[in-house]
Image 1 (spheres, helix red, strand yellow):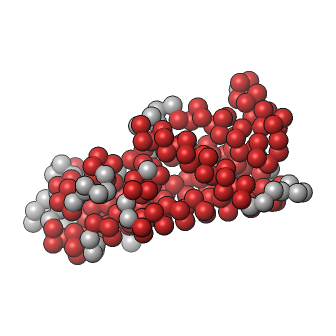
Image 2 (cartoon, helix red, strand yellow):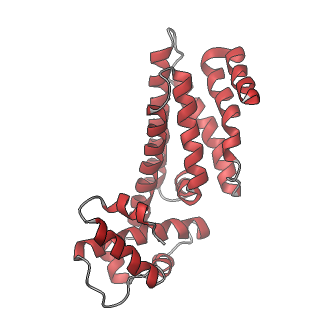
Image 3 (cartoon, helix red, strand yellow):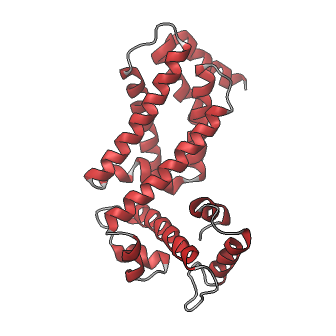
Length: 245
């Protein structure tokens, strides 16, 4: 099921609250599927909701089945949407997956960026808040997170490029934060190493489905990140502060 919040976020503000509420009510009464013959909603809204249902179904299917074994029919069965409607929206399963990946990655970035904006101006505070936002997103959205961090690695060359670009973007952001806060920051390769190490930990946890207590990793991840830039003593402060909290 699509929540009203997710639906409103996905389809934008082209439609009124009443129309969005009616769409959710129809989906709820029909067990998540648009009832046959119901055309009281604007056609563009129906199409937008169908698209979001297909993207949500793609995320569910790829997490359960894996990209290589996944078929379009697996997506259709979960979305309750016809094959012709699927091909009105997407070229093939890869196209659908890439769009779903982009949407999930965008929500992940928005969560991190919002957390960073609320942090104190120091690079360590901003890094701490950004990592906290990332871990919070994974706890709240484990399927989307697994699709982005785990399943994209085994998808297609285009999916792997999307994933690499996302990680490169995070590394560039960390490098920019540190350069503003340190007089003599290390090479930009340090940020790539930090992101790679953090990604490796998260990949393992997501692959095992161990996301329930993921936020407890924050002090250790901060230790690892700060160690690369400020040394062992400063990194140790991150663990000490967490112990006292």
